[in-house]
Image 1 (cartoon, rainbow, N blue to C red):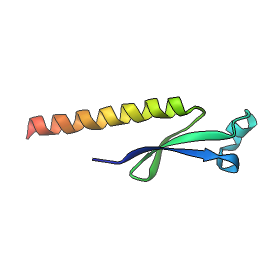
Image 2 (cartoon, rainbow, N blue to C red):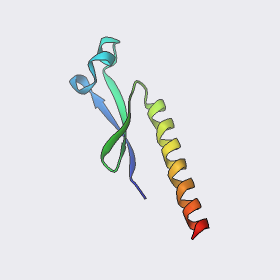
Image 3 (cartoon, helix red, strand yellow):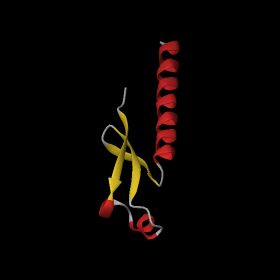
Image 4 (cartoon, rainbow, N blue to C red):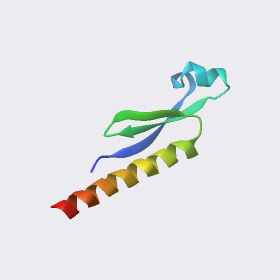
Amino acid sequence: MPRIDVVSLVGSAVPAELRADGHMACWLLMVDGQPKAGPFASREAALACQAVWLLSTATRRAGDSLLA
């Protein structure tokens, strides 16, 4: 099962377009250490995306076991 994490970026690590809008932090969705979605301007949005990835992964795994 892949590792699905939400990580935060702060300060100069935040993309310029978000900093220009006044954001000093953003969040990314990482799957097995690789960025897969984001940046998100809110942690809640990143966590919602994480929930979708987790549900999708669980659904695929359940489908695999039904076919085996």
